[in-house]
Image 1 (cartoon, helix red, strand yellow):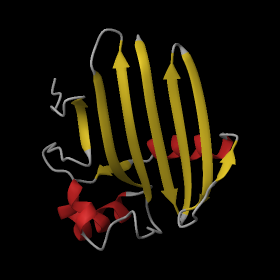
Image 2: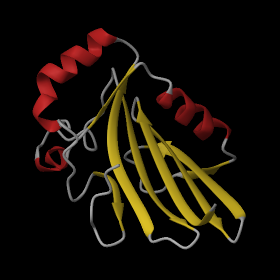
Image 3: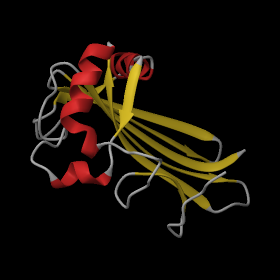
Image 4: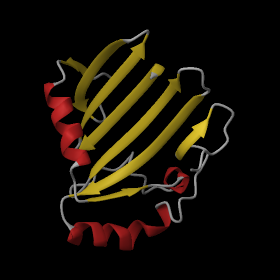
Length: 152
């Protein structure tokens, strides 16, 4: 169904990061995993056990919200500050279906295990979150390779 795909996921929780990169080319899937402290210059290679577990845990969180491009303009950026009560997830992917143009998505999420911490974060950072599915130039839902938003 797909000619190629590049899917990168990075999960940051409690000052530690987990990154996975999946490359699909010519029906061959290659995966690579790295883990390490989020402020480290180099993360160590991982067999994927810890990374897959953290990625699965993130997508099972009951409260997940998407950040807008505004998050990159403030000193409160979750990319610079560790959230003790939240998990940050970055999804960056590009897929090409057979005979079609490439489609891209890049989104930054924050996830919580409970609604109390989520409500507190929303009260503090609500302006930084996506509202009404507005897409940005740095974080966006599906776009074609020309930069046009794909709405269905």
